[in-house]
Amino acid sequence: MTRAGMYSPLRVLIFALSLLIGTIIGIQSISMGLGQAAVRAKNGTAAASMRPQNGWGLALLAERQLEEGRASQAMATSRDAIKRTPLAVVAVRTLARAQDKLHGPGAGERAWQAASLLGWRDKQVQVWAAFRALSNRQAEIFAMRADALLRTGDPDEVMTRFIRQAVLQPEIRKAFIARLATNPPWRTRFFQAEMPPHGRALEGVVAVLTDLGASQTPPTRQELRDAIMGLINARRYREAAALDRRFVRRNPDPESMLDDGGFELQQNDYLLHATPFDWAIDPRSSAVEEAEGRRYVVIFAAESSDPALRRYLALAPGSYRLTFAMTGRPDSGNTLQVAAKCAASGVMIGKSPEGPLAQEGRNELGFDFNVSADCGLVELGLRRLKPGSTDTLIDDIQLQRI
Picture 1 (tube, rainbow, N blue to C red):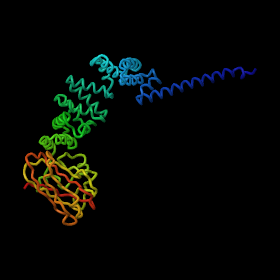
Picture 2: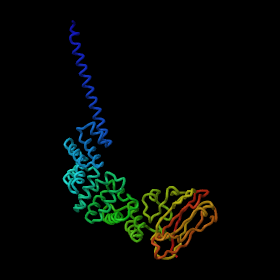
Picture 3: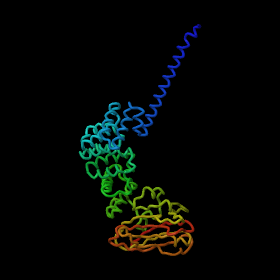
Picture 4: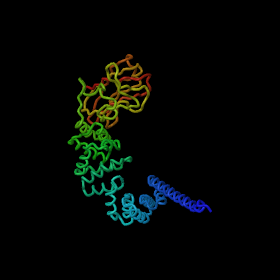
């Protein structure tokens, strides 16, 4: 027997063992990968079955058990998950919820407190911590938790409404404004969520905007817009006008009670940065353009049921005349209408003359209207009543009292 023949069975055994070990490692790697994928997909059942020693998988399983009404089982699974992965905030939070459900509110207090130290990115934990800080009047802690909640996003805007109502408490609002004044990434979203706000959420936003005026970063027109619209919708016209006047300075055009009758701002200003007391354009039916050194609002030829151009005015009772220039083909006079109506009643109190334009090109038009004491605000609007033969230009809008 040769020397090579003596060791061939040993070599075969070593090779077989190597192959077996490699297979085991491969299976283990696949199991770990699948377990991690299940955790990322928040599939607690799959994660726990593939990697039972992974606390995150058990935590997700416990959460699912609680959602299915199996609180006792969820509590046991949560504790098992915490033993394996003490930092699994989902497990600690689920334990707290299960204890509250089984033994009454407050039973999960210690677990909630532990979760609040871990769950800076966990929305449910942040909500609990924010509620607790609010009930204890811990203003700085509430502001910190509210900041964390808004940074994680709020697609259904539930948390934004909660925070807007919470800041009605003066000490809470003061701490929250200190965060707002640093221009966090969620600042604009806070003011533009739930467009427009109403009820207690509206009260909170108005209070924040008012107090923010004393900071180094007062509110912008864009941030004021939805709150002012909320006040208008609530028929609180004087408050809406006062909030606008406090932060927005307008210089009327020569011989006019209006400013910006020639549309000197940029397109985005009318789309994004306007309050209801500025001109607002609908990009589906109008645009701001410049031709031959003049600025215009172009009203597209297509019909649109919504106003292409709109603005609210706070006018004292009396008689007024609105004038403007319309440039287009003669049929523009038949297809476009500029009108004034009372915000309180919706009743039209004046409109542009009906009929074709006197000439092709630029025409000077106007109409008179009377504002009563109960009108609230005057809403100016321009809309295309039916399709035109071509686009029409509007500019040089002026208002005089008569």
